[in-house]
Image (cartoon, rainbow, N blue to C red; front, side, top):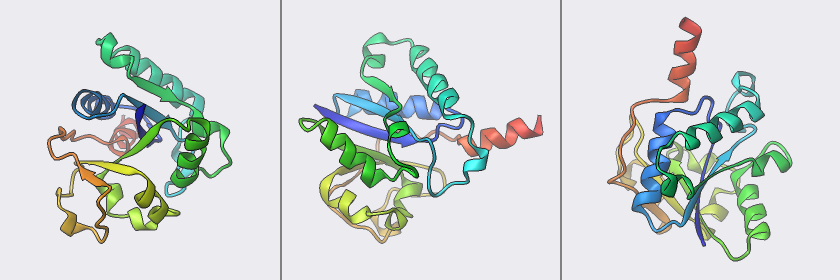
Length: 178
């Protein structure tokens, strides 16, 4: 099976997350996309995170509300990282997934903003050398390999993916202003 790993805090989950994962399921060669709810991102301030079980529950509810059962069946909201040593690092998650599911082929799904800091990720070269990476458009970035210091054949720009002008950070800011 070909599985896309779309990791994130989903703090909060929003229509951009759901729209992107739906598009990936419909327009790529992946059999499923696993939305990997991260208990903590080592590069983010964990003090702003909502409870991990709450974020997991809300992500599952968002997929149920998708309205397309055939697509929803191909999207799995996962707490896999909740059971790994913390902080969770993508390279460790991918190794653990490969051990648990040796017959699956995993593809990492990240935003262009993350590609620009990918060389700061723990064991980024291991990830590049062993997994495909689908890169989707994000605000303030352009779909161009020239804008990053990473050039690798496993990096695949999803240039036709829709652009969603929303972020969890903005939503959290708006909720504190209300």
